[in-house]
Each structure stands twice: as structure tokens, then as C-alpha cells.
Amino acid sequence: MDRFRAMNVFVAVAEAGSLSAAARQLGEPLTNVSRILSQLETHVACTLIDRTTRRMMLTDAGREYLKTCRQVLEELERAESRIAGQAADLSGEIAITAPVSFGRLHVLPVIAEFLGGYPRINTRLLLMDRIVDLMEEEIDVAIRIGELPDSGLMAMRVGTLRLVVCASPDYLTRCGLPTSIMEIAERDCVTFDEMPGGSRWIFKSKCFGRKAVKVRSRLSVNSAEAAVEAAVAGVGITRVLSYQARSALDAGLLKRILERFEDTAIPVHLVYRPTRSDSPRVREFVQFAAERLRAPNALR
Image (cartoon, rainbow, N blue to C red; front, top):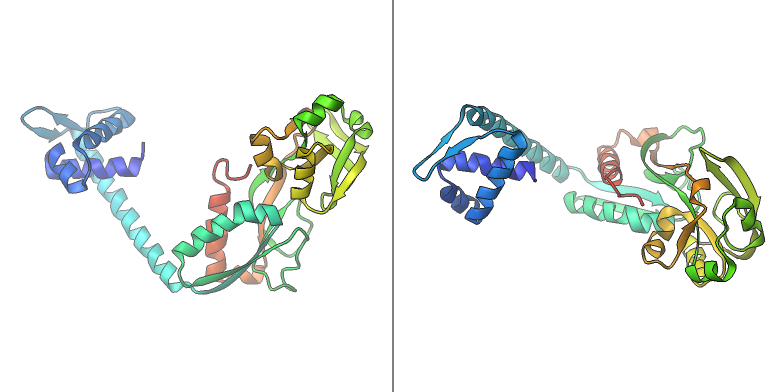
């Protein structure tokens, strides 16, 4: 149930004096108005409006709730007006950097939504898998995956990712399903140069602790997309971040293996220079992006 919509319907019915009048005022079908009001009463666990064939009357609880609904809706309207005014006032450029595929999948949609609400702000997005010096590259905000080293940067944690080991169903049928970490050492692997450790894979789990294995790199690539595509083609086992293999995993083109040996979360942060925290447009973007990236299932 959309509570704000339900509150709007309740206020409209209370002020109009009938369901049909409220439906006309809201431009909603009468059945919708009746259903939403009933859902709201179920949610608050009491009758708000006594309804008979001849008349409608607010209950004592309804009169009290009506006051609260009006206050909430009026405050919301004032807040939206303030934000709209801020959006019109904010201007200038924000420079943002992110890892290539993460930026394309997760950051670019956030930027597009942000620009829609702030017509006088422009952004410059730099997608690359190396760590960018924010001052040297004149970057305002960076999205960083992994533990942060000590630095003078400000950071806001927005979520976590996981490393996944995966292979194509065809490869696993041909070569068998590994059941231990050490078995990987004898298998063909596709390694991703940008992944920490390269061909030395370190696994961390609560049950099994920290274990490392030197894998046999049948193919070494310099992008996660290439590693995933090679694994889908049956070249071997690969290890990438969860979001990098998500579409192939969801489509059944890859299958996760050895999950119990890899359950350590990898943090994702928004980082920015302290000197940029005074910029209203940077502060606004950081808060906006953090809310979107922290949403359930936003990072997969």
C-alpha cells in the first residue's frame, strides 16, 4: 500500500463527504477510492469513517488521524517546494569516477536521474578500473570498491559486493564440479588482471578461514566483461565481482561454485575530497547517490 496515496484519498473523502465526490475530485475510479480507504483502515487497525447508504461520518479516531494526515501532507508539500527551489538554484559541474562496468550498470542510471532533477548541473563521468587521484584528475566524487586505504578523503559506505567463482554448465559437465579450493589449481582458469591477486586467488569465509590457491591461468584478460564472456564460452573457471557476472548467472550461462568458501562482503564507498564537501552540488549528489545505491537490491 502506498501510504501517502492512501492518506491523500482519506483526506479527500473526509473533505468531500462521500466516496463518489472524492473519486471525481481525485480523478480515480470509485472502486479504487473505496479499496484504498479500506486498506488504510486495515493498516491502522481501526475504522476511520463510518459508512452507511445514507451518510458518512468520521469516527473519533478518524478525526484525530485526519489532523495528522493534513500535517504530514502539508509538510511534505513544503519540503518538496524547498527541494524544487534548491534544484533550480544549484548549478555547475560535478566530476565523477567509477569502475567501468559498475559505473555503467549502477552509477550512470543514478546520474541520469539526478540530472533530471537538477537542470543547471552538468556532470563529467570518468569510467576506468584504475584508482584515480581525485586532486590530479580534478574529480569531485569517486565510487570505490574494496577496503579503503588511509587517506585524507571523506567516505560514505553505500553497500557491499561479493566475489564469485563461476563456470559454464558445459565446462562443469566436461570437467566436473570442484568441491574444494585446492581442486581449482588443476583446472583451466580465466584470470582478470585488474582483480587483486591476479592468478593467486584468496578465499575468505567465516567457517573455513582464509585460504589461498595459485590457479593455472589458461587465459588472462584485462576486463571483467572479457573474463565473463570467456567463462560463458567454456574456456574455464573465472572469479569476478558479483555484479560483473550477474546477467550471465541470472540467464543460466554461468553457475556459481564453491560459495561456502567465499562469504566475505566487499565494501562499496562514495569518496570525495574534504574541500569539496563545502560544495552544495557535491553534497547534494553524494546524498542522492547514497540513497539510490543503498536501496534494497540496488547492488547485486
